[in-house]
Image 1 (cartoon, rainbow, N blue to C red):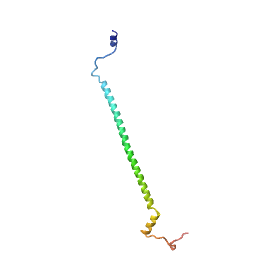
Image 2: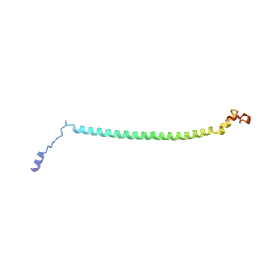
Image 3: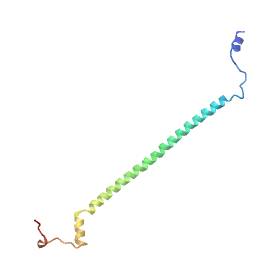
Image 4: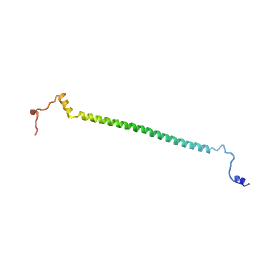
Length: 107
């Protein structure tokens, strides 16, 4: 008899009310939140991978430009060398070294 008194004092329902959608709403909201978190995680990972590829491309381009700069600097030094300028002046432009009477001293 004591067990029956315990059950009477508790609010126990034998059947669930079919018009009560609180569990369904809670499940849908929880599922939506989990889905949003999953999409945010995937988006952030895809962004990290994309930025990694862009950084790799930028580093490759930087190295290539550094090599090109070195080649151009070497070519510039070679083109402005006094021996080359003297050779072009004498062979192509017909310049000659001045003789003693052609030198004018300025005071």
